[in-house]
Image (cartoon, rainbow, N blue to C red; front, side, top):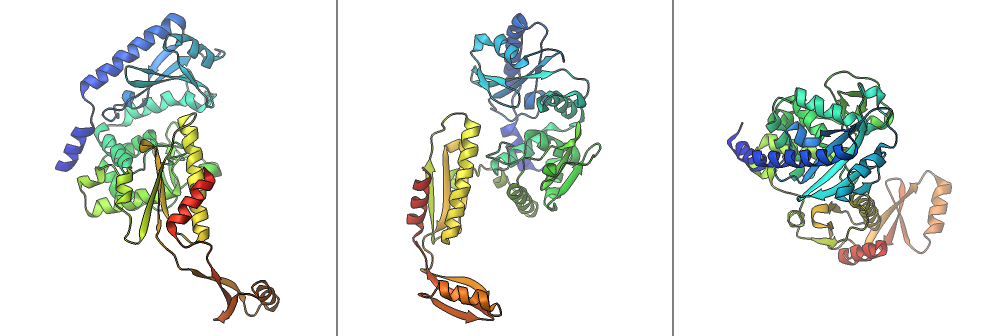
Length: 385
């Protein structure tokens, strides 16, 4: 391992005390659950169970296993946690969330099943994911490096507003490729539709066939990297190519900040950013906001403004980088001159404008609605407020 990677690892790897604290909290919650639901089995999940946790991660996942015939397991879970005044998180199966000693605790009710085919909900398969990673991941340090690399470059997170790699998919990548550097050197060569098979493969549904396909080793009909968008896939490949050519600790610096994106602004561009206040459930709000940002981008493009944009959840902000000014005139393409009827209609439509012919096609010169970048972005953003 390169010396700078050893230093990065030292900065991101949790100390033993952190794991001791997590286990203490787990035991405390388990004891409380047992007093109300003696037949439910608490099970530590997530990166804490798999030893792939990054330092100062303030989230703890606990699964609560119930016998298959048990009814209303979400309600039973909430009742057993009454002491902690949990919040109900709406999902395909509702689960509980609360804060305890500066940690965000999520308690997920699942059925205790012998094989994934018995699952009534995707959540029931999560303990299988934990056990698979614990059994097959030989070098968790390598996973921590890849997870941190992805996080710092805006590639981490399977939420709909992130469209990146989940922690589980990153773990599977390092099981497959063994080391961080081998993973990155392989990613640099990926093409759209890349498929990785760790165990066995079965035909996937069309919705599961995305830019990157990692066949889930415990659910062979599932793509473990289904959340990754094509845009994020291409970004992962691009950054991996850059790292392969010139490895350095700079790739582990946080690039999910307004300050970083502002540094990308060109001389004849403007940087626009706006703060927001989260209303309601964080994930739902950010997913809706991300769609809104996409629509703002589309409207800018329609006006002639190319743009870079992004959402920075950590700073409750989004940003746009757009040209300061674009030309006042735009050339609009019309039909080919051989299409007589279409040409006639085109000329009739633009009788008051300058229509001209070039290389067998008609064109018309039009005035843009707005040419000032700052005015354009403010006008469009205000219309979405």
